[in-house]
Amino acid sequence: MEVLVTVMASSGATGLGDKVQKTMDALAAVESVDSSQDLYREHAGPLLEWLAASHHDWTVHSAELLQLDVVVTHAGPALGELLPQLIPVLRSCLQPARDPAMRLQLFSILSRVLLRAKETVDSQGQLHSYLDTLVKDILVPNLQWHAGRTAAAIRMATVSCLWALISSESLSAEQLREVQEALTPQILTTLEEDAQVTRLVSCRIIDAFLKASGAVVGPDELVKVYPELLKRLDDVSNDVRLAAASTLATWLRRVESDGSKSCCQSDIQHLYKELLVHLDDPEGAVQDAVLEVLKAGSVLFPDLLVRETEAVIHKHRSPAHCEQLLQHMQALPPAP
Image (cartoon, rainbow, N blue to C red; front, top):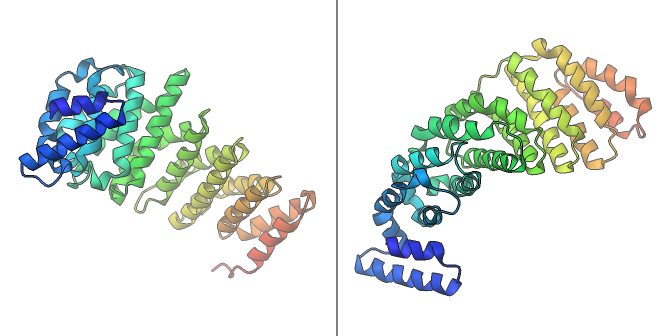
């Protein structure tokens, strides 16, 4: 198996890869297993041990890195049984002092398996046992700001990895809350990144954090979030602007559901005013998105929002969206 994995890792030619696969199938038949994936299940543990022996010296040029990619890609559900070997290797190789190009490649591998976590690293339901290591020892250090394009690329890869973890639906509400508590400050910072993808995914992560059921977010923590999202309504990317608007709507719903509105009235008034500016945005899609945000937040202080809207409606190029908002609020049931 070591020879076959080495050939697969180094073969650029499709034909050679096909020959390796045929050899794998033949070996599976000899070992009386159903498929090459079953073969990996049998041998993945020893293969990882073989590779891990040299992981302290790996760089992006190490053959072992390509071999690890092959094993992780093909092991499938067997990865869930190999977390005791795999996670320490990732933890060591993804420390900030290690080769940046290697870390980028490893984050790509990790994101790929996390996206299918239930079929790979969480096939045994044990990923939660390594969540603390994954978050505090791998993700947090790589989200720290350092100058340079490579450092920015690593932060983008780390944010993408976190999004893959959240999207995998492998985390319970309690586990997602733990991730939220550990990483919200860093993700608020990555909302400012130069890379559009990083800003976009960061918006989506904050949205997921705010939606997390059972998560305890006090008023002090809540008011730190919305100004960073508000900045993104001025983003150069419309995709980011729309994602920020959606997340602001989630923020307002969270304030309502948590019963925090009395503590946040001045912040909500400020948010109303800023959103009303964007309700006159040149981009129709942004106007529509902001209208939905204001509708979502209108239940908090409807009288206040009516006054703020009436104060600016004459300044807008078209009163249409303000009128829609006012009509929406007129239809709201009276406050209890």
